[in-house]
Length: 205
Image 1 (spheres, rainbow, N blue to C red):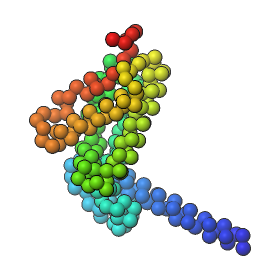
Image 2 (spheres, helix red, strand yellow; image 1 turned 45 degrees about the horizontal axis):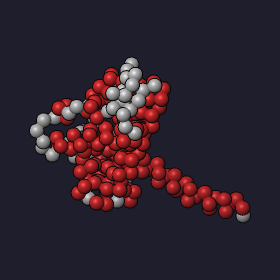
Image 3 (cartoon, one colour; image 1 turned 90 degrees about the vertical axis):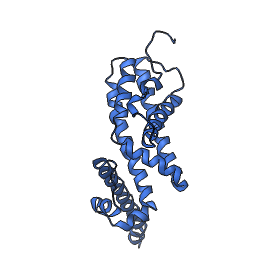
Image 4 (cartoon, one colour; image 1 turned 60 degrees about the vertical axis):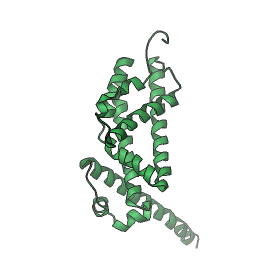
């Protein structure tokens, strides 16, 4: 009898695990397809097929295709951000760090998808909380990275590190949105390195 009760209790847990696994496969498949075909439309059927799932599971787990694409866009961005961190750790000094980080971020393949996700958060209020959760995760991840780097290298920043992370990403993402909205020029016209105040001077200037 006790064994049956244990099996009954574990069934919902197994179902939740399967649900989480399916959800993650859908996000990863959408992120991969969007990365392979930047700017192209990706259908629900294509995403489901790539994830080994059914098309109706997109609606079941995410509510809409747009919601899934928001999750996928930020998954790609967080993966790119980790690669950017590796580039940042290789910099021998703060000036090189600022320059290399800015150049690498503006070349990230996930930026167009994230720009679409941000636009979706504006046009569809129900997606705004999803966008906000992912942005907060990005800001916290970046703040932790810079905090460790500053501590290890003896560098400093001229403003609080949470403000540093938010300012940098807001500048980068804002530049992409402007270009996509039709503003003249490209993201490379932006001095993104100037949005960082991390330095290794002997004393603040």
